[in-house]
Image 1 (cartoon, rainbow, N blue to C red):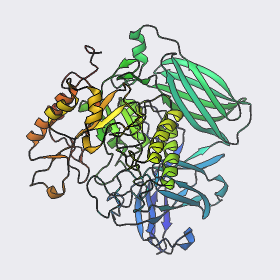
Image 2 (cartoon, helix red, strand yellow; image 1 turned 90 degrees about the horizontal axis):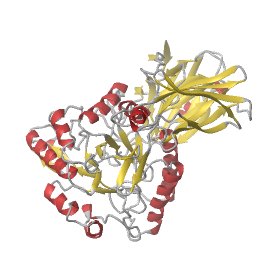
Image 3 (cartoon, rainbow, N blue to C red; image 1 turned 30 degrees about the horizontal axis):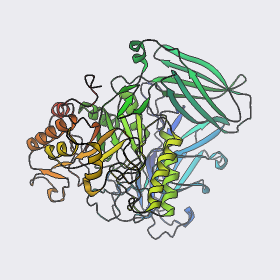
Image 4 (spheres, one colour; image 1 turned 120 degrees about the vertical axis):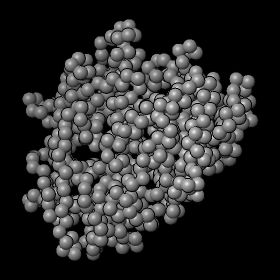
Length: 620
């Protein structure tokens, strides 16, 4: 369906409602893959848009002119948005109309992510505000609908480009990207969509699994008109045609928390068929219905998996067995769309490329990724370390902002089996005086223990890189590209106590006083960073990396030598190579920014898998 939308200059704008969706397990395009219901309608597409650099507009009626059209969900800094403006713009406005979906019950308006602060009006009536640039929010707009059959949504987004006390990740505070920081992302950068629900509906689902007891944990919370009793959830879990569970549970006071016992398949050969891993990513389909007596209130599709991740002494454990992690660091940017993927196919292709290069996981660096990426990692089998985007100033406001948003991140993503570690801090960013200042140390300790409280099923890396306090994995960043130097620091002749006391990669101590290494797994979670930037390439002068190669053959040789060395260092139970793709001025990717390999994927894969690896069957 198309609507004619008239701007303030009298120009007719054709806005596509893009309301064709698939609702099937094999072709999911739903922006929230673990809580799908049908029908839903995307509001991506052309919106009216205007900058308000001086912040004069407080409500929609204050805005005198719509100056642009923007292609949502692409940020105005991106070329794909149709604007491509990288100047400082602290305030911007969006608006579009759509045909109100027919039906009874409630109408929900969903935003995947708006950076950094958003206020929303519907039909010129203020609805709500959300703060946090990396997490989703949903609004019930039923009470402001009218009889015209058309609904208008207006959004104000505020994102101060100079504010260093908010979680901003790799977004640069300078006008032009410098060093390891990239263009800013302002405003809407993930899918906007609507859906019809009943007066009572499932507002939140959470999954986890208990490998030892062979149980699936399920939590749900109702939303809307929530009765105290008289509501049941019917749950069917299945893998293909095989039904694992088909039960009904009472919901009391709008919440339910149940352990669903599955039939133990017995010996390991049968168990392994049901376990999720990168080698065999078996997912369990979930069909969930909400009933009141004989009346169906809601129906959703979801999924989970049977898998467990733990740390056992110096090993990372997947499904009760030592598992050697081969991760690649991924910034999650694209040249024309910045933090927003150009398509769902692009997200799937990234997962496929990472696996084709021999890696079994990815460290999503300084970005909370679109849920569709996590979906493809679940489906195709890729481990994910999820890392909170940093603030770069320590203030009370920064602490409050990060704590609140990190809580939202864990709530949104903890049900994805692909996520195997949480990383609240990276390289002491936002806590620059961690060694000297007790408040900084207490902040890192608090975030570590908060994360463990919110999700006790995954390892937490308190501060990835150096200056560790409490942590489940000792994560080291060392960009020395000479293999013999890495062996000298971490090889078999080195005592761990000597390494921790005397080695300072990046000039930083590895563990803080009073937080000795207690036998946790040691991983090299950033290394490499070798740039290929010959002088005849465009922007070669601006190319950045920890070391520079002038030929592809040199890059191939150095990558192969590094990976063979790291794979053979027994101290390490995993690694993360920097990085997956070139990202703006950073030319240290194994792939170019358009995802073209710099040397053959087969060669990359052979190098990635070279050497023993700490947890091969012969060594575990």
